[in-house]
Amino acid sequence: MYDYPRLRDPLLSTILAGACFLLAWKGERLPDWVRLFAVFVGCVFSATAIVTGLNFLMYQIAARKEEMSLAVVAGPVRFASALKGLTMSQTDMVQRQMATSLAGIPGDDGPVWVIRGQAGDVPLAYAVDFFEWSKQTAPYLWPVRRGSEAGGGDGWSNGVQYAQELTRSILANGWAKQASGPYAAILVEPLETVAGKYGVGSD
Picture 1 (cartoon, one colour):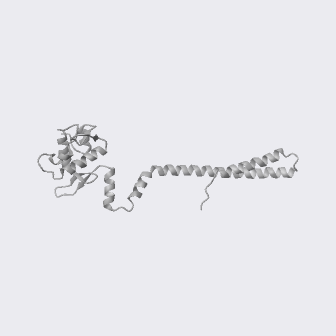
Picture 2 (cartoon, rainbow, N blue to C red; picture 1 turned 30 degrees about the horizontal axis):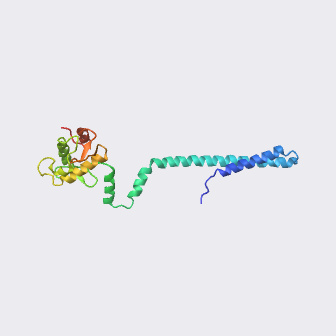
């Protein structure tokens, strides 16, 4: 086991060195060789105090630097440790809780863009309809319970789920707050601004 430097070593050496020098200074009745020996021992303890003191100081500086370095990467390290042993689906679920992102799914006519929600993906085309229809209820978002009506007709069979995911994402980012009554949430930023954050134009 590694013996870490301790403050008691330089302190003890300093006390012993002081005692030896005091003995040599005040011991007039002692033989000269004893006083000389006390000075020699005092010098040895003084050198020991300096060496052990510098060793302790350098160790403390290095330890503090290491702590600061670890603090910088503590978040990613803990996140990586938390993901260790998880399946791909579990890892994907954790990542969905942490950030909102756009993803392109390959399709016959090119990539189909979706907004990654906490529980599922929301087609970007639905987000366009959702924000367009939210103009009717602004500053409230379009109600989740009427999510399938966004865009007109019954074109979005999973509209309620999509509206729930979008609303949850907007709330999580602090762009809206929960509202009472028939509305899902009330915006704290302009609708056009929030729509733009999801890549949806204001026109």
